[in-house]
Length: 114
Length: 500
Image 1 (cartoon, rainbow over the protein chains, first blue to last red):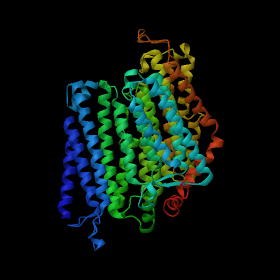
Image 2: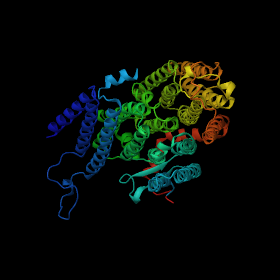
Image 3: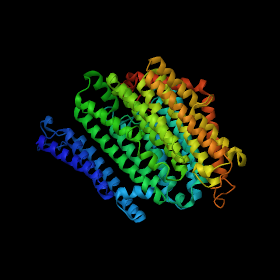
């Protein structure tokens, strides 16, 4: 299971970096989103993968060593919210960018700057 | 309680400002009150630190390492105070300089957001909490840099946004790696566990990720390209504030992380830091020398001077760290002063392009001097603060016999002087060029902005002249950084000791 997750996270990072290197600004933003998903997953698995064990004691728990670590779950929740906010800001930004410059191509952009 | 005030005041101000964002008088009054209050709190914190040592507050009464800890030592207190002073002056300058559309668009709310993030980053002793403050700071700066949505601003902000979001991702990934290895997020606890158990390959890769993430924020070589693309685009009042806060927070965090975690592998880190510091200095200074836009020149010099601060971190001695810290404060003041003077020159002559300026010294000697003094300070001419900052760093470099970086630092000083003289020659001494668009030229500069600019120029001078009284604070700060056991004990062993 660990190996599958590691490969999944690696694949997400690869996709993110690949998209970041494209010329289109839309793909750039998608790349950022992929990177943040990969990071969120990485953060999630830092507590270790434990099957069928609760994060909190509901009164029925007898063996506390079976409990799964709740902290990464709290962290990832914060990270998701922040990532979501930043992603929506980037979306608005590229929309305004497109309206102002009429292009989504970063290479054309540097031509305009000259 | 004192340590929460730098966070509560801006937060409360944001809420109050949001209540009535169209009434400028109300916004001005509230913003000024808020930054003055923050300045007073910063002074109190510095005073308490000098009286009773490191201040610690545990949030919600949860003791470290379980809860989040806020901590102020000399380093945090000095930087809080410096940012407080810059904030007061920037608010006044913005009131006079920025157009009404932007002011009504939430300029002051975003300033407070930025201050909230900066103050939080200086005070927190928890890496995930640090990440959150970084994001608070980043989102405010994203909106500030695009505020007004001029074409130029949108272009610059794309690079800024992408680079900084990549940095945040790496930062978060490094936090994950640290947590998976050590099971804690408290900085003192991490430092303690590193001392006891040493590092593992995974921890080292986390430290490298941290270095890259903060390197992006601090705009060091080779991650600096976003800075010259984005800083010159918003109104220069905003640029001045950015130049004094954002990159410096990156440097502060590097200072902190190096003294707590990375020093363990000093033989490995030192050459890396020196190489990056040297390249940052050289690239920044050379690119500045080839530009003709004042804002671009000054932006490149921000990068170049980050190199000096890194050099101080790499030296890791009492004088080296004190020099680096002093250089951060010097740079905040001088950079803000030069940017503000450049803004006034623009208001007076209608351009930032050196080729279209001229005759300033004859027409408006006051403005010329307002630029000259901080510019000389940046170049390091005595008795300005820049001279002392470089003196300490070079002294530490000679003391440690790290010749290569010391010589690079000396040479880069000369290139910096060249750039500053270039601006002076072109803008102030050269006869008025024919390219000056006389219609754009206004003979008036805004009096509030002018007063702010004069004040910061005097403060820049004062920082250099009063060095013999203030330098004790900087050496104390660097002793605290070098003896990180103080930090660890303050957070872990004696909780609530200064919780008033």
